[in-house]
Length: 111
Image (cartoon, rainbow, N blue to C red; front, side, top):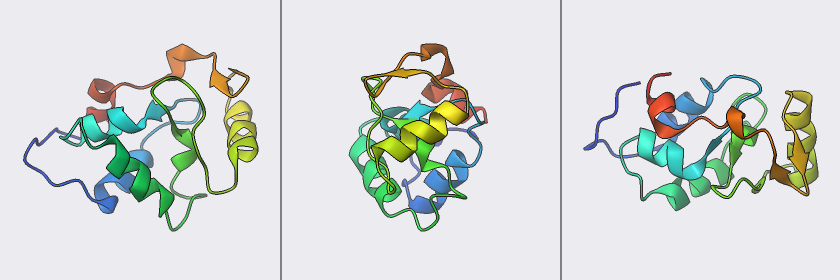
């Protein structure tokens, strides 16, 4: 996905990008915002994900906070951690230990 800095971020773009994040990988709200052209829109990304109409199909569980903590999830943090562990990620006290699994904005923009 090519970065267009003039493009308005909307739910369709966010959900489309999320579906491209592979199992066993995660990204941050800020990296999604940056990949979509507005690195300051992390809170908007969170708001869009909060309204995700289908959290099973659109894998919002693959988005974590920039500090590596798990962040929110429609079905709760415990379920989010359980799903991510099933995908091969390792956590300690709700913080990601598998740092190599985090996709940055540059990588996201190439998906």
